[in-house]
Length: 558
Image (cartoon, rainbow, N blue to C red; front, side):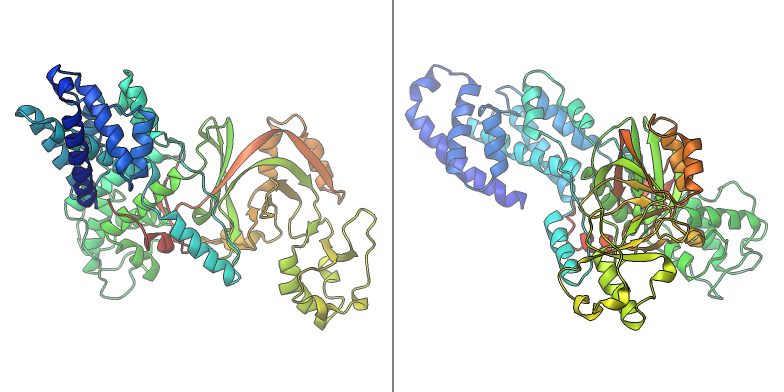
């Protein structure tokens, strides 16, 4: 791709240089400054060039001045760019971007080692700009084809799977960084500062470098078990490769003594439990089918997933608020940060695969004690009307009342008085289904509102036993909280509108109370299947919504 672009550049630079040379012989004779001639060539070349929007906008921002090539040597920004790419250990050393960078740097330096004409320097100016464009895309925008992914999301919606992934475009100004560098700023330093800081991005980059080194050293062998399943105290030839596999990724202490290499001893069992925890598996110390599949993922598969998640982070909301709630769907976990430090963590239940929780950002604005549950239209039609058709009073046992209309004066109706069949597939349902406050309420006793077009919020739940599950995708899209009262306590610690002790008394009754917050708290719902946690441990989780698979179909390799 880059070679084709460079051949095109050579044609139009050669043409423009020839024209300018014939028209400006006096200027050459009078040794007009290199930059002036370069500016003329860049300006006129870009008028003829039709393909690269990046080059046009880039040089327009720079007033068509050369960014990389000076008369006697490479510019300071060029030196910084080459150094940044050389030192980026997340780049595949055998990939096309690394190869292009090495080749172009060597060619650029050779132009000053020997006498070279103006035309070749102008060709190199554009080559380096194209290299800069490619590296900017790699470092700040990543390889996910978001357009193709959103099209696949749209296909899911056609098949009645309501889902969404809201993007936040990276706030990176490539031309602005070079413009500042030409005025004396350090391009390398600006490029380092432009990389994401949130969601432990730098730690995940370090994990990528570690796994790339493992790959360079040969990765790990596939584990095969004689008996199909390995339990503590058993002997199996596969124990040797299991021990080596866990040693390579750091779960097993390489200095631990081993008297019987084929014995699945206590030390190795503990190491496997650590592996299971960081892969979202039940830490029972048994090598069953699910654990074996995770162990036998190759280092190259792991590297690809780490890269994918690094590129997802680039498109998340890059804010640094004083307080911040993060909910990672594949981890089924809520994290509450204060100034970047973890102050609270709890399990959550998220949407099922056919009712996925959307990926988006918002702010918690209100907390409701003893909430009503106003049932969404989709649930009314798919789940409740079929029950009413069988028994008009089926919902009363769950404390659900039906009102005609939504106003404050709406009156409850007798469900037996309505022909529910006509609303099974209609576009509108002129009734409000509301579950009264109480312990049977689907929202439990506390609801945390961040108003959004998805009607998603965080809430308590009466289905507490589900939190014992390792994988917790059971809801219709909202986030059910393991410890809602503890989250309420956290809000009360800084929010003057909330009296925690008084709230506890309110929760003993059924009166619904709304508390508007004076300090909104940002909440980001994210989808990361590889992430470094607050203890610095690299975590992997299953792709519960198959977003990994969808995005990897059109993922750009560098």
